[in-house]
Image 1 (cartoon, rainbow over the protein chains, first blue to last red):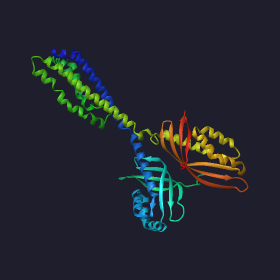
Image 2 (cartoon, rainbow over the protein chains, first blue to last red; image 1 turned 90 degrees about the vertical axis):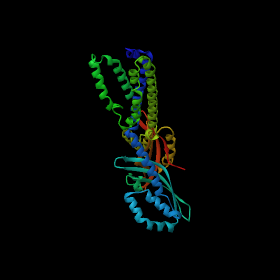
Image 3 (tube, rainbow over the protein chains, first blue to last red; image 1 turned 180 degrees about the vertical axis):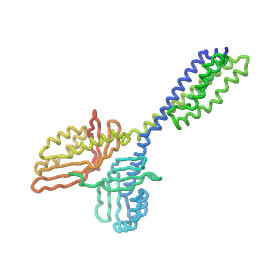
Length: 176
Length: 252
């Protein structure tokens, strides 16, 4: 009898109502939070941004080389790459180092702009295009400044996205 | 969620327990509800994460729930008096906890959605990405092509595809071509060879464009030169068409 009385207590009714409202809000909030954190597009967007950041950095590294710090520069080339490109760099390292030492050039690169053109998150592959300005300074003469249209392919590795192919966009082949 | 449902059930059970024998259907319904409810405690759609978030709530049950029962049963003298101040207090604590969780959840969800990476729907929105790419590639090809024989077509293209600052930028960029075109019988053709969407957010986008330009002098000695171009464009959507609003040629 007394128990039945408690449920009619206005204080209890009000407190219950508030608790129910709070519970509903908590449920809705939990769902909303879950929905926000399990958004496929969000993880894809994150992968895209990661790939672009890694791609731009790698393309810049690959166009930067100072004959005075040659070993460090070539190490960074190797660290930025994977797959075939990496293998080519390792194989050609000594011959290339000789050339640079002889030419005494200092190349510095600046990324002007970059975009991811394709991204297969599951396969761990991405394509990037990067607008690059490269300045090559030789012991004699004015530094040469050229702009490069770079196209790169990135492959995801345990240490993040790395370049597996890199080249300049061809000119003239499709125009006309 | 779970805690309240338990409490509500408990309160109902407490209320109906004296007459449980007679009110069999009600009791049966409650039992069914109690046994089926726990597996679906968090949101049905909610998997691991929500389950974790909610985990700390059910843990409190043993503390909160048993209280009214021993109180009601042990103190036979005035069960109502013992119950009355406690139940509201429990409910208040519950309300505060659930409210705090709700506030955190909504705030956290909002901040997740506001992440810059999510604002940019380049590639994540496949349809919109390919639409802006296609339209802007078409626009670049049209406005950076010029035929001395039909200069009006270039003007039309500029009117169709350009807006804002890009109008003047385009005029400046083509000024030389326009001046020399009649004399040299110039035909300039621009073809986009590569484009990528750097940023896309609703009605605004930025694209990186690689293009080839062929410049043909059709005068006495026909001669074609090719040039490589790269630039970025800002695009805006007006209605259902994208237009170029600014051209960034990366000049220092």
